[in-house]
Length: 458
Ligand SMILES: Cc1cc2nc3c(=O)[nH]c(=O)nc-3n(C[C@H](O)[C@H](O)[C@H](O)COP(=O)(O)O)c2cc1C
Image (cartoon, rainbow, N blue to C red):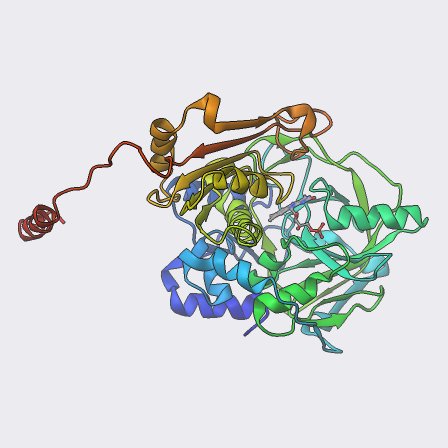
C-alpha cells in the first residue's frame, strides 16, 4: 500500500477525475482559498482542490483531502459504508514501524537564517482567526517516560519565522507527554508533519493506552509497517512519505496568547492551552504539497472526526455488546458530540449498558441515543421518530449533571472547567408487548414499484 499523499491523490484522480479541481488563478492566502471550499460546500460539493497559485508562495495548497467517507474508505481499501468498521478492526493490531534511513522530504532543508515558516502558503481561513494557521500539521513526539511515539493534529498559529502557537485542548497524549517533559524540566522535542496519506490521518486519531506507540497502530491500520525516517536535528522518527517536516520542540512552561480560531464546532474558540513550538529546521520534498484542512465545520475537518468516532465506539461497544449493529456519529453534532447506536436488543437493560460504555469512550461524547436495529441510524429523521414514539423521558433518559462530567473544551456550552453534562436516551421498544409497526402488502408493493418504473417515475 502506498504511504504518501501524492501517490494517494494520483490514484484518486485516476479513479475519480471529476472529483479533483485545480485552480490556477492567483488567490490571496487570506480568506480566499477557504471561501472557495465553503462555497463548494454550500453546493454540497467536496472535490479535492489544488490551489496552484497562492500569492507569496511557490508551493501549491491541497485541501479537502479528508472531506468524504469515500476518500477515507479508499485510503483503507474499504467501502464507504464500512470504513469505520474496518478502522475498528484493524486499529486493534500493532505492526511495528520500519525504519528507512533516507526520505524524499530530506531533499530540501531550511535552517539558520534561511528558516522561514512563511516559505509555505500558510492560510488565514476566516476573519475571526488570530492569523495564519497550519491546520493539517500532524504533531509527532515521544513520551518522556515510556519513549513511545504519538502523533495528532493540532492547530498551529503562525507567530514568526520559526515560531508557532499551539493548542493542546483535546488533552490527550501530546498534552500529557508535554506535562511529563515539564515535570522533568525539559522541552518536548516535536516534529510537525504536513501532507500525509489519509490512512495516517485517521490512525493519528486512535485512542490507545498512553504507553503504546501510535505508529504501531497505524501499521495495523495500513496492514503493513509504517515507514518512518529519523529526523536530522531531533531524536524522533517521522513518516517517510511526508511532504513537509518541521523539526523543533514545544517549550516547557511557556505560554503565549493563541487564537481565536474558527473551530469545528462552527464557533470561534478563544480557549487554548497557549503552548509554543519553536522550529529548528524545515525539510521538504521537491514540489512539496502543502496540505490544508479548512477549519470551522467543514467536511474536511469533521468527516474524519466522525469516522474515527464511529470506529472507536464500535471497538469499545463490541467488547461486551456484539449485538450493536450500526454506529453513527452525525455531522449535525460536529462528528464528535452525539452518537446513535442501533442495537439488536436481546435483554432489557442492554441499552443502558451501551449508553454507559459509549459515554466512557472519551470525554467528548455528550449524547447517546440507542434505537432498535429496525432504525437506520444514518437517517436522522428515523432516529428522531424512534425518540418520538418509543421514549418516555422520566423512564428512558439518563442525565449526568454538568458538574460531574468531563467535557470538550471547545464546546461553547461547557463551563470554564470544560465540564459537560451527559445524556443517554433509550429509544428501544420493550422486548415484548409494544405497538405493532406498519408494513406494506408485499405483493402490492412489488406491483407499485413495477408500475412506477413503467410510467417512468422511478
Ligand atoms: C483537523 C483536526 C484538527 C485538530 N486540532 C486539534 C487541536 O488544535 N488541538 C488538539 O488538542 N486536538 C486537535 N485535534 C484532535 C487531535 O488531533 C486528536 O485528539 C489526536 O488523537 C490527539 O493526538 P494525541 O493523542 O497524540 O494527543 C484535531 C483533530 C483534527 C482531525
